[in-house]
Image 1: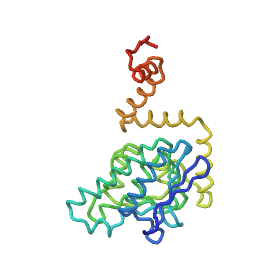
Image 2: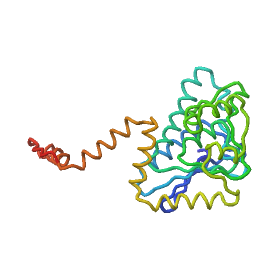
Image 3: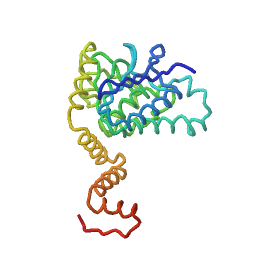
Length: 259
């Protein structure tokens, strides 16, 4: 079995996902998408984890995006059938994780790497890094939700500027545009990310998770699922909800009292 290229570490209530392919600047392969999806799904079911950090290994890159050799070898039909659809599905899983997510951008954040960062709730960047959506420079376009998430975050005009030019911007400009939340000295990136994660983890976890869902739902991200989840929880907490389940188990007619 090949060595894992997406690592998971859990320290108390904080989980850290690390893209671990530093020799290739943490470029993302199909296998890494599968690993990322599996890890994210496991964290979603883990009630002890309250915050998730996503970062890259090494000191050069968070991720420079999709591995070009991996997708260039695909037939066009497989780009539709597998690569684009898989990336969308996995990044949607990341975005809809119950727990808040913080992307710690430790280096180059390009293409699919930027799209992964955009799927996180909060982005903290090391000073001196560069970010960009360079897909048009190699004859393709952002394919893992970046055009949509970026436009919601920084507006269509600046998204078009980044995507149309394929140019890189530095962390300072990214912060000014709202693409990242904070820029910190490189040596402080880990400690600042952990400090924010700890601050979040010390709050009531269910309140934080509901707040995340409500904010995202208000922006149109899975709003139907958010409403149904909250409605289901509310209904289950009522006396009628308890009575309905009890009556089903006892094979009798329920007596609802409207409370």
